[in-house]
Image 1 (cartoon, rainbow, N blue to C red):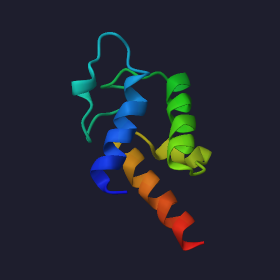
Image 2: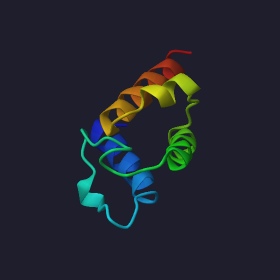
Image 3: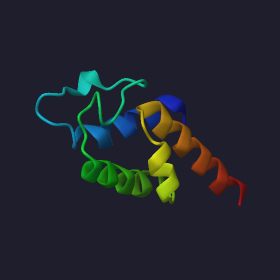
Length: 87
């Protein structure tokens, strides 16, 4: 799966959890989940669960701690996908 496809899938996941005052067009690679997209911690957990299902990967608590921006999430997804393809 190419980077653009992963980014689009991630945006599709995120948009479900955006509050009414944030538009899908506001999602960029540099967007901070909490401060810019106004996603609360409970929804961040939901996003992680959806990411696990969508990309068929397993995320750990430390992954969530590192997932501050959309780019961080994509980096973690890439790392996990690489690990599953290596095994």
